[in-house]
Image (cartoon, rainbow, N blue to C red):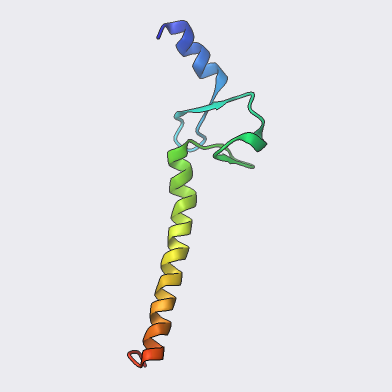
Length: 80
């Protein structure tokens, strides 16, 4: 890759607002067609997007699983 194409890529593609890495999203892509765009914040790269949004989903799933196990224990008489 020559220097001109590297400069072209950095000027035409978004950087992640969290980590600063260059993303694969062109600056001229409408926000409604972008993956990883956060309204009011900007563009996230896939890794940062997963860290923020999937972590929240994992926490909710763990909470639900704990409640279900607790309810099952109460039903079976294992928990007071």
